[in-house]
Image (tube, rainbow, N blue to C red):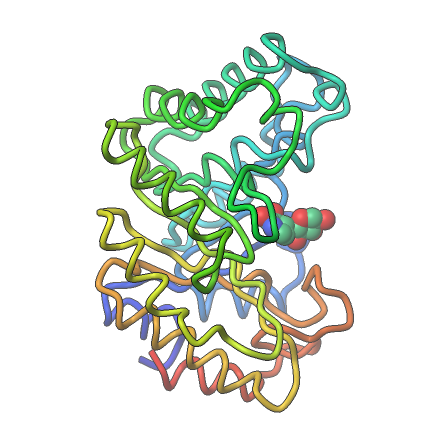
Length: 298
Ligand code: XIL
């Protein structure tokens, strides 16, 4: 293929980008999006603060714009994200206990029901594990509602949208380490007890090196019986950026259940990693060496 999306499709995968609704009027941005990608993740528009700005009042304006754009161009949509400690609306931040648990369940039910049939996968829970060596959960108001909050979130999402793939998504989980092993143990437990989980997302916000066991880590999760996806890929600039992109792509293609790759933005100027130039296109929209190595690896 001559584009990222077409080349990935030849291998039975998708190649997506995180998209901001506010940039859909930028012709350079939209030109690259429509030409190169065949999947979209809303960068912020499906998060809790965006979709339920006051309790019980749902707002889907930004998300709808992205979904409409995706549908008009034949792009798949990855839903991101239903339950996350960050970007909670201000009304939820001070909540705790059963009131917060009920609010989370109501939120998941409303959002997943609204987008039923429009998203192929949901990041049901995002970033629930702690960094460092504990392998345990991150502290948050959601975690303090009880350790079962994650499985409740997954069961709620399944009931609301039985057709969507339900994913757990996190960062610093790209190699085999205490954090990824903690998640691995949770997924194994969920599969053994019938908690509905279909996929694990690896954000892959990477520095100047790709962990040597990146592919082995994807494979061990796939071997549990879930799909794996690279969900928010961006890689620090520097002499290895192009090679590192190729390494990630080859790792995904080498794992049968690695179903797709999403980069977290289009041009370097679109990246949340300000000044790091971690993406595939320059700020003026030109293809970088990292683009060419990615395309060649697909
Ligand atoms: C980031 C967005 O890119 C920014 O625009 C926003 O200000 C903060 O969130 N992990 C995630 C993503 O799961 O939702 C985050 O996106 C980046 C880290």
